Image (cartoon, rainbow, N blue to C red; front, side, top):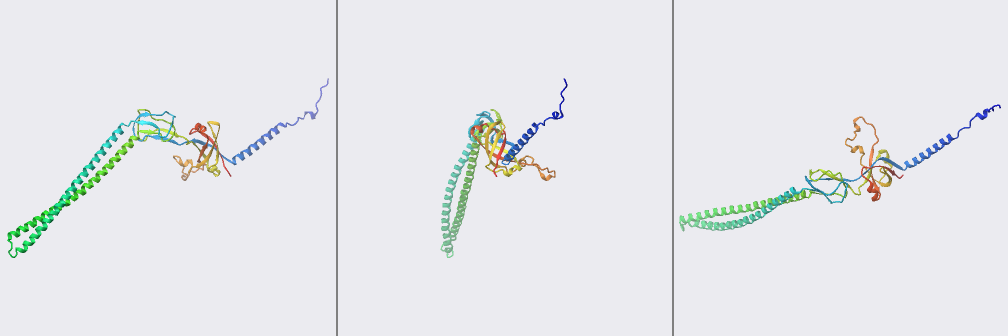
Length: 353
């Protein structure tokens, strides 16, 4: 049998239409994706440089001493003014008793000074009376002297009588002068004693300050929670010696969780206070959280660093800076209870035209 021959038209293959269709679909998808991205980013500002923050209160010992008791466990919830740590207070009680004793001694000094003032006042009154009596005697002696001085001239009295009158006058003058000096000394003694009373009163006030200070130091041996929250980072054990100013533990305050988002400076143009924020928490991908832009930091993060950049050194390289933005979280207590300071989040601010 003869073999069938194929014509040139039969050998020409039909063009493949699958590849143009695929390319068209990809192109259409790219256009749709680009349009969606354009629409999205025309109303949103996103950043993944964000984390959850909170107000953390470090609890610091204000006095030194040995830890006597600890009334909480690590990561335990505590309430404000709850007693958490007790430092051995025996030394501070002794100091308070010493302050009380010093105050009692100073108060007794007030009574002594008041008695002295009463005594010197009585002496002053007596000296005043003696001075007035001496003055009266001096006046009489002076009159007698003047009278005898006139009578001795015409011989009515003897020279001896005149001399006696003169002597009596001189004695009266000396007595009066001594009485006056004694009265002045008594007056000065009153002033001196009153000044001593003022000094004693000042000493009593100082002793009261010492008592108040000793009471304050004693109160510091009882360490209370400064705020309600969760106690963590406990750095003490019973019997440990702590120093004044030493951090004992920290408390993450309740209802203080917020987000710090570090936006690029080129993203700040459209951000305003009060704008809505969508928050994605890395630890809980399915958790839907919303927030609100609260405020903006007064400087970039680099300016608050330990060694801020100095662009005047001559080796300037322009780098886009980031500005911390505080975002308040609007969520239920159940959701807030899941969030922890330090968790990473992605935030998307929906801004208005």
